[in-house]
Amino acid sequence: MNNTIRVGLIGSGYLGKIHLENWRKIDGVQLVGFYDPNPETAKEVSEKFNLKAFESGEALIESCDALDITAPTTHHLEWCEKAIRKGKHVFVEKPLAASLEEARAIVKLTHESGIKLQVGHVERFNPAYLAIKEQQLNPLFIEVHRLAQFNPRGTEVSVILDLMIHDIDIILSLVKSDVKQISASGVAVLTDTPDIANARIEFHNGCVANLTSSRISMKKMRKIRLFQKDAYIGIDFLEKKTEVIKLSGEIEEENAFTFDIETHAGTKRISISSPSIPEVNAIQSELESFRDSILHNTKTLVSETDGMLAMDVAHQILDKINQQLFKL
Image (tube, rainbow, N blue to C red; front, side, top):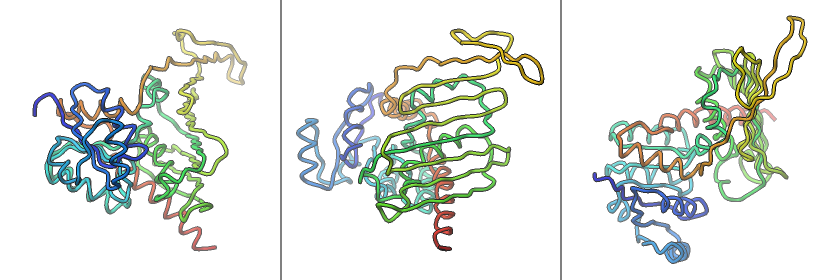
């Protein structure tokens, strides 16, 4: 392959259009076209982006080096399999698949083929999250709130696979320990699957994560709070702000506000800082990361295994909720 990657897109709905806009900003990429099964949508998008609308996904796959899949989750396995069997690299939106069995099938296909596959857990590239990369993180308690107003898009899956899975992926990337136990509850309000859910994840290293997700909220919120020995870290994914409060060491942090408090163990100095937030377009960054993994033959930053592990935890949460509802 030369240094220009030919990219095709499957599914030109809301997110697909955003991906098309971002692919056009990325160097080293040739956007060859897209496929959408809806003729009206295909015509509209083709005219808007001055881009070829392929008559079939199979024809598109033959014409590209990498496939970007933003089709509904229920079609992820179908298009991943068709692309991988043709030796094409794959970027697929989260969740990786509609079921854990399908996710495992995609992982198996990827490992057998040797292609690059990246899952679109875009919060990994959120500038507020990137701002804490230099912090020494060893959280013992994690509190998460992800609230959204109702939108029919994405409701083919539960709120756990639609929204909470973002935070499950972030937590699994932060906590270097296996899951010990999960408890959960949830309610289906406007759809046939849970629209609001709460989960408690306990890890073998003692860390506990408490997650709340809702897609029927009156307001939007995307916050994670990390508590660890000597420190609290707050990440606001929506407002793109980060706050770090910790016991101050001998070396004062630059631009940190400090003050002393009296405790039974003596005087403690508290440091409050707001790390600088990089100017980052998260979707463009994740697509550039995918490009780089292909060009440099490196591991994708959010791999097929990462996507499957997040789905595994998500389905354990769903199973707990279903068990609870069955008892009612």
